[in-house]
Image (tube, rainbow, N blue to C red; front, side, top):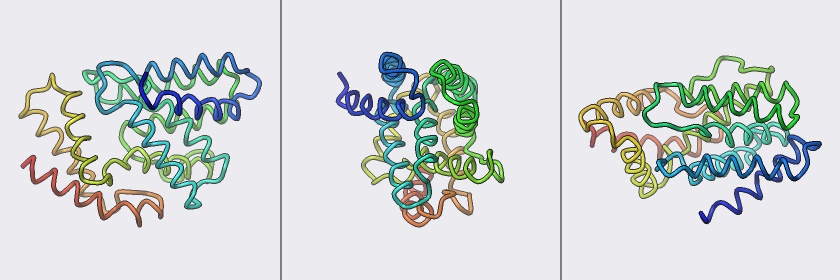
Length: 227
């Protein structure tokens, strides 16, 4: 068993009890098993339980810095659990996120999660397709803060220490092994160049202050390698 499976399942059970208190432990466990199977699919290299754990850790950091209150942090983690639940490297752009959002909506409804919360989670998953957050977010300030936090947590990897960033680059290349090298390099340069060209990579004040410098170093080094 993946070393992350047990702690992730424990985290899911704690979140599920808050999200769907009436569903009961059997349904929480069944959904947790489904989540771990999805994140553990053998064709994945980067979009794995490791990425999920990193996103949850980044959300914890943002909550600890005061960006999210308890309820917002729970919603943001719910987005984290589902945002790459479906992942096919050969799918059309946006397809994985749309399918993951549909799974989040259907599964959370089946657990009895409130419709308003499900809507915020679905919006958060869809946002990860482009990492563009609509001004004002959804559901007023709460939705905006959740989307901003998910945006930053999913992009935490850009600010990872150099060895982890190098491993991330290798994992992404393995996931897209079916893409010829010249096409992969051009596509990757376009995506990473888009992030590097942003005036502000991260939307929350904490991530902007704490993560930007290393992210810009990583992006510059990778773009130089891709040139």
